[in-house]
Amino acid sequence: MIKILLVDDHAVVRMGLTMLLNNYPDMQVVGEASEGNEGIKKALLLKPDVVIMDLSMPHGKDGLSATSELKKQMPHVAILILTMHDDEEYLFRAIQAGASGCILKSAPQDELVAAIQSVADGNAYLHPSAIKKLITEYMETVKQGNTDTYSLLSDREKEVLTLVAKGFSNKEIAEQLTISVKTVETHKGNLMEKLHMKSRPELVAYALKKGLLGYGM
Image 1 (spheres, one colour):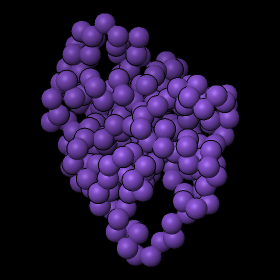
Image 2 (tube, one colour; image 1 turned 180 degrees about the vertical axis):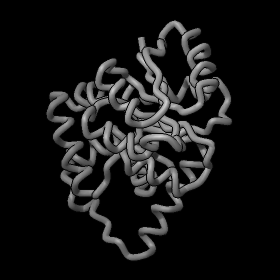
Image 3 (cartoon, helix red, strand yellow; image 1 turned 135 degrees about the vertical axis):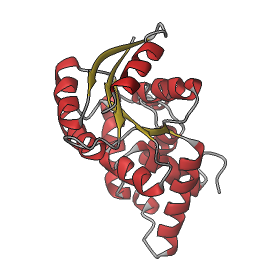
């Protein structure tokens, strides 16, 4: 059962999402909040697996600030940003804040459900146009002369990077490489520090650029 917390300032949106998601046997909306501060308090109390976070909440703490604060207090919670803004500024700020994914409010029902399941499994989720923008932004960064630190990674860190980018969970990576989950987490932390990245979506874009997924730009 995926426990879900909804954080959105529109009561009608929360009600609609609750009715929708509770119809799925593997999902349960365990709480709601109308702004970021309330969302953080509810998350700490209810321990959800996934927080669906609206970006634009004019009263109280906004979605980006709440995401950043919540990830500091609950590093393992998955936060899926729900937004009407198909804008790269919001996308990159959400990823930098620690969001596991980003989906548009205009997305079909099936896509929303798939996104929730994906981030609940420890994977990243970005809608197609967001992936394109993320890769384009990364390419621009490279063109501006930023140093590629891939050579600083150990062979094991490169293996972990590839598997993380392909969507495998820490447990699955540990089984494939015959190492402990704790060791996987250590390698992942080290490689993210070396690459100056904070989230799985950033790693996915980086792996695409490097051709580690078997396809790319």
